[in-house]
Image (spheres, rainbow, N blue to C red):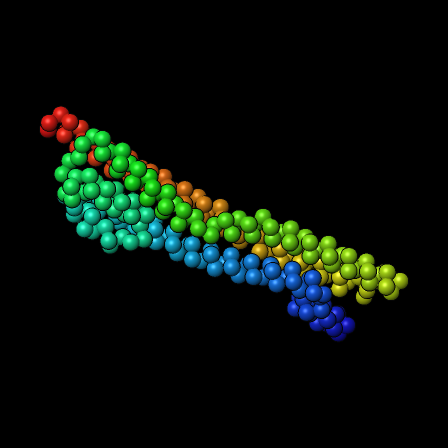
Amino acid sequence: MGSQTVTLKYGFWDLIANSGPVGKGIMLLLLLSSIWSWGIIFSKWRLLKRASHQNTGFLDVFWHSKSIDEIFAKSDQFGASPVATVFKSGFKELKKLSGGDTKPIEESGVDNVNRALFRSSATEIAALEKNLSWLATTASAAPFVGLFGTVWGIIDAFQRIGATGSANLAVVAPGISEALVATAAGIGAAIPAVVAYNHFLNHVKRISIEMDGFNHDFLNIVQRTAISVRKGG
């Protein structure tokens, strides 16, 4: 019966409720950071999953279509595909250089298409990496915020000892418990953030490599047409 009373008195929520303003502020900061991190995790997971799926679909269309105009006509079906977005940028630049048509261009125009592909790729990568820095910040900073709460709780425990002149468990336990809760909260906020950050960063790198490969393939096609123009073919 006695142990049950202690559990109720020093339960998790009781420790937070009985903590000082600094302790509550630290816990609130960690809670908000964790909630925001989980929101980013779920939204980024959906975004990257859809991007990968639509990249696969677009590349299948790209390699099995009969003409580049047909590819462009179908590209709007893959609005979440970074590769499709990059292709549309290159295609529009190609049409601009060829006077509104998709006829072969001069070899000097290949660099223009290359720059259009590069700019679009950089924009897509930046969009995919958006908010990942927050996960990295949470992963690195949350344990230290929790550590600050730990130190503050220990300081509070020593202050209670000094005020009461006693070092028994009833005096020390609240401060030490508050310190350990802050440590746990910091680690609890950091672990999902660091795992998600590494996973998403690797996923973005794979998509980036996929875009780079497509850019080279598309540019090779443009270069072959430019060479044929130069040779009079």
